[in-house]
Length: 69
Image (tube, rainbow, N blue to C red; front, side, top):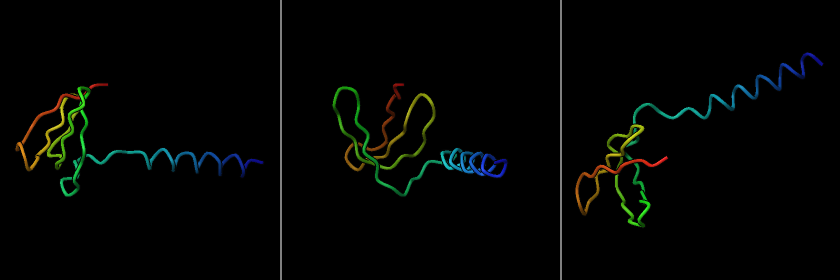
């Protein structure tokens, strides 16, 4: 029984560790960002923090989009 509880705990901890976000944004992927007013932007994320996303698009260049929680 102790082994079973330990294994369940260990697998739960592994799943939690897999949820970590990378510290650096992935600038190789193309992302779609949809704003609350319905605008859609496609581009590469240059930076991201709790308040804004900086997105480099082909059509309008680099834009800063506020993040809404």
